[in-house]
Length: 89
Image (cartoon, rainbow, N blue to C red):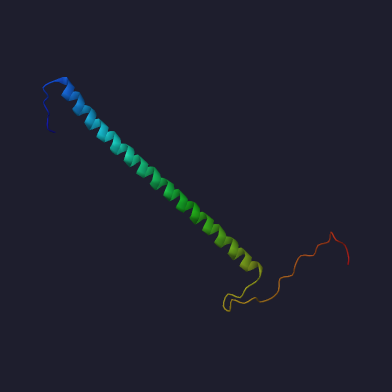
């Protein structure tokens, strides 16, 4: 580390203020960049979660309708549940 010698305290104070001002600015910029990176990662993670839920729900619906995995065609109709609240027709 090099030592700096100053003729008076005013020059010493200005140099001190300049050095710590630059350091504070650098830390502020790095903090902003870090917060932006964290926010971006959180947004990507949320999007990944949404895509996973959408994929899982689409697979669940696919199994409800009994698709054939090889031909990708519907094997048989799925019977709709009977609504007993309406009574006989």
